[in-house]
Length: 362
Image (cartoon, rainbow, N blue to C red; front, side):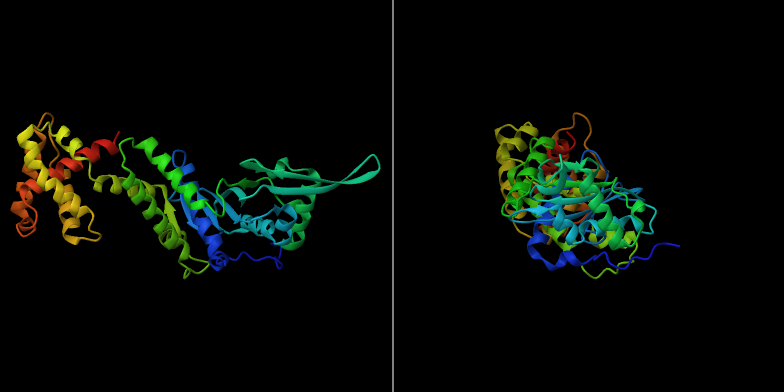
């Protein structure tokens, strides 16, 4: 029969009670999404199973890691972690009925974690203190006296035999984010990440991607109407953010960004006459992209992209003539749309999309 657990209960909505903790938790989620991007097809769950939960895959996951995030302006100690039941609550994640393999149970702090214990050396007791400054410290590397203290606490609070207390997957993670500057720090991280992957990306595109990510993660964080026993599919829908979501946001932002006029004319191998012909529709496209929520522009953008996917450019085809071909097709199929956007406008938009597509695939 399973041991009865009375003293500690996982609170899946506790994170919604503190705005400041929520705010830095959003930044930490983005920080981890960036950090894991090249290594894992992850799914992040915000503030449901725990503060931050990371699955190894976004579909049919096999492994999961649970993290609690704690912040302080001064010091966080292992004694406070024990007193506040943070470690006992993490250990309860091992008792979940799901078949996921628990990879890690992590305590994330913005300060070094202070460890203290009493020794008895040469007949005299002494108090030892040490701070965990490392980015990642396994509990297996803690002093045995501290390990024994944690195991006894979890045994008492979770009402399980002490030999069933498993600390092998526990770790302390010290985040690089600070309470005052976490947004600035993660904004710098996303900029460095995107610039390394997409050398031609513009500052405005980076800014747009960052704002979109923060808004999506905030919405996921704030959603509070899911019952504790919801299916993973439901949790993913309302509280989840995957690597694939991240990639789609980046690709969409890059695709909709407008290259410089010089890049457009260079890509089209434009002489002076063609540069003159491109100039006006290019200026109109720039203006249209600045209109937030302009439904007609969204429609012409999506329509142009769809037609280009059906009729891709052929090798050595003249770029501007290809753009005009796309424009003529749209004009035939959507004459009302072409009252606003003529063939030359669509031709230049098509060139912009060709440039962005080539850059996103580099």
